[in-house]
Image (cartoon, rainbow, N blue to C red):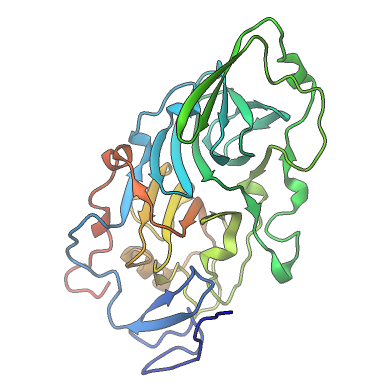
Length: 380
């Protein structure tokens, strides 16, 4: 048996409650282990922890604009690899015509987050319509294809050698955040049966062990007449997520966890009321990525803690340094706070460091690392 050393200590000027009632003229920084679940300390600085003026070296906060990456094609295996490690692979894909083959990922479960567009998905389990804002969960080795109604843009998140599970709900119960009743699964319906054929050759492009294999059938392999069980393809739309909230305390990102896999989690930030307590922080607090890399994909709205971030962009904050709100966002939250957020974003927190692909580097805003830079004659 083992456990962390834990004993409460206070030194100097401190707040009795994290993220509230900060000592005048200070900036709070959370230093923690195991994301937001392990032991933590809160430091109160006289300057913002992100007030650097120069940054040298490859380990840096990055902003990647997926809108600048050419990833069009009618196969998900044309998707651009962005960030990856042994647990997860993030790819970006644009598709504007029906797939003429089936895709199958033998390396792990996959989540498709539909950034833009709509269409029909056909898979081993049946038919499922989709729209923007849908998470589509594909169990490992599921054969599938899409027929877009309009150009589709998506983020693909592979859980390498693992699967997706639901986050623990604890004392709030199984119907909090989203009721399982809102999940929609693939159906054996007339649309699915109508696409079956015995007189057409179909290819299945199977990725396994990071290599592509092509399997040819003289018929359509999506020929199921029925199925039973509790493993299937299903979807969840962010519009059906009802976030946990506290009007007196800014909750950590872990409160917004949607999916859990080995070595990483997927969280969803959706519109919500902003904390109303006058002495509570109203933007994400400064914190260290001591054990996790943090990735945010910006989907919709006004990203209230960031400057110059547009829909379709990705930020990557690797472990090992402090980050938090940009200076203008922090100042605005204190002088004229909003009543609610207007943003939708997907966060991927990874336990092990992520590698950055060449395609991602080609679409990087190299100035992002200086977006926290202090202004002359101010303490922002």
